[in-house]
Image (cartoon, rainbow, N blue to C red; front, side, top):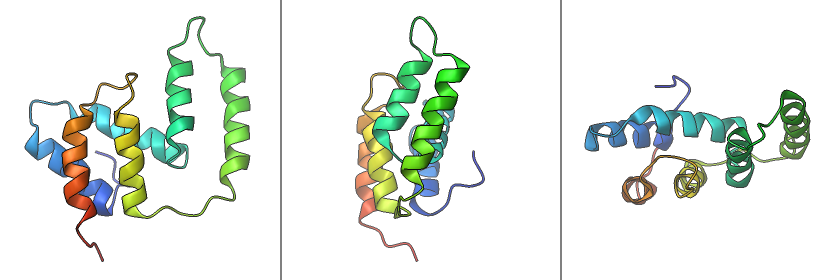
Length: 118
């Protein structure tokens, strides 16, 4: 598990791992890492995944250019709170491009959103 997770995101990963032991948590961790990399932007992250699986393959120059555009866009972004991050995780889990059960993620997200983490 990524050491940089904290708060409700860390709790989500831990609860998912504990509650759904038959599921591979690694895919969830990788999805969250990608969301973090693209400033929790579900659409940008979905695009990156889609381009990574495209035929013909997405090349390095395309990725460099896209990352430059996204970096400029997200420089002005405000930090997101835990519940917004959970919404992003749930949003991306609904994509057919990731192998995550969005209903299982949704049930944990729903429970966590009502908790207060100080």
